[in-house]
Length: 217
Image 1 (tube, rainbow, N blue to C red):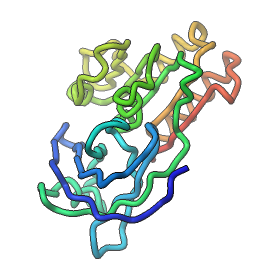
Image 2 (image 1 turned 180 degrees about the horizontal axis):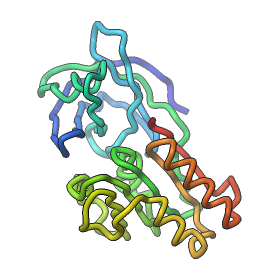
Image 3 (image 1 turned 90 degrees about the horizontal axis):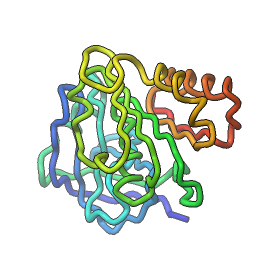
């Protein structure tokens, strides 16, 4: 059980991942969390806060989040412009999108920055025997991290060639769900993809207890 408290954290760095996404690293300030949980981030003196999945590992000495920068957004463009030494307010951790190590075979399905909690799974040693399926628009969005080198990593790229599939992640699910029906399926990303994926898995007979979801937008 984790208590939800508000603390000031220092920005350690901001890494541009693509034209529309950044990774922000903060001081950890002793925060404990479970891989898959999220935090609430805001700027001091403001009343705008957003939830972000933790992308760092449980034993990393820092916190990291992935931010999809929304043009004209109230918070994400400001977070993307942060500099080392700046401060943010963080509360949490929260959420129950956390893997049970007793069930090792998983299919992890993400769109865009929805890959964040799965990165925490990997860095925390909680993704053995997993397959990672990542849906993006451009191939550059799949080169953010190198944590996936030890597992099957399926890149579904909708707007150009170069991945394992030219198309959306739901196409991959439709093709592969029958042979992976014994696995647990974990979804993180946009709501339309999650709903379509859920429907496809139900069609091949998966029990709802095998499906876990974290909706971003």
